[in-house]
Amino acid sequence: MPSAQPLRRYPHPTAEDLPRLARTAYGLAGRHCTACRDYHVMWPYLRSLGLHGGGPEHRFAEQHAAFAAAARGRKAVRWLLAGSADAGQLALVGSVAALDRAVLHRVTIVDRCATPLGVARSHAEAAGLGLETVLGDLMAFDAPGAFDVVSMHHVVNFFPEELRLPFLRHAATWLAPDGRILIAVNHVAPGATVKLSEALRTWREAGIREAAATGRLDLPEDLETFVRRLDGMRDSRKSAQQGGHDRGYYETLASEAGLEIVDIVSLPFDDDERALHGGHPRERCIMVAAAPGHGHWRNL
Image 1 (spheres, one colour):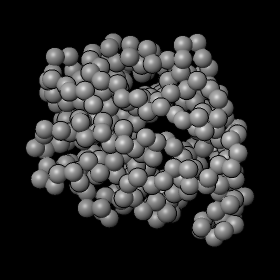
Image 2 (tube, one colour):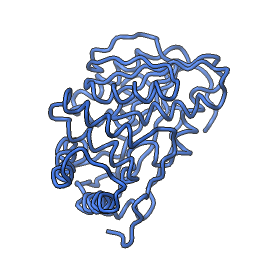
Image 3 (cartoon, helix red, strand yellow):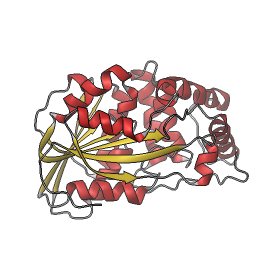
Image 4 (cartoon, helix red, strand yellow):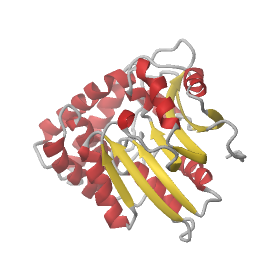
C-alpha cells in the first residue's frame, strides 16, 4: 500500500451534501435493504471521506465531458440512470445542466432498491433537479425510445455473464433516435485476473478511524460495527470484482447487442490507485454507444 496516503484522496467534484446524504442512506438502508445494506450504507460515507473513487470523483473532468457531449445540441434532454448506488450520477447530470439553464433536463433513475432512490430524491430536492424514480428490475423496465442519454455506471458487471447480452439488447430499446448509451466498465489486460484488494480495505479502514478520532465523522452506530460493514460491502460485490474481462469483451457485447460504439473515453488509474487495488492491470473507460446509423458523433 502506498505510504502517507492523504485522507481526502478524492475531493468532492459535485454539489452533493455528502455527509447529509450518508446519514439519509443509513436510515433508508435500515428500512429497505436486505443483502445490499452494507453496500448502500458504506458507499456515500466513503465518498464523504474521499475514500471512494467509484463515483464522479474519479476523473471527474473526463466523465463530465462525456455526459456533456452526449447532451450537446439538444433543446431538452431525457436522461435515464440505469442503476445508481447513490446520488453521484444524478449530481453529475446536474453539473451538465448547469452549463446551460435554457436546456430542459429530465432525469429518471431505475433501481431495484429503494435506498439509493431515496438518496437521489433527497439530493434532487435540495438541488432543484427534476427527477422521477422507478423501483424495479432493469430487465423489466419497458420504455421504448424514451431517452436521449442512458448512463450505465458499472452496471453491466452486476449481471451474471449469461444475462449481460440480453440486458444490453433490452437497454438498446430505451434509446430515442440519435440517443447515446454511456457504458462505464472496469477492464483488464487480456488474460489478467483481478482480485479483491486488501490494501484498499486497509486504507479505507484507516481513513474511517482517523476521521472518527478527529471528530470529522459522526456515526449513527458504534465504530467497530461500522468498520465491519467494509467487509459486508466487499462481500456484496465479490461477483462483480473477481476475475475480469478485457475491453474487447465489452466492445463485443455492445456490438452483439446491436449497438455501435462511437467513442471510448479513457478514465485511467494513477500509480497510487493501482497500488491500492493490488497492482492489478486494471483500467476504466466509458464506452459511448448508439443505435447503428443514428446521427453524427464528434469525438470527445
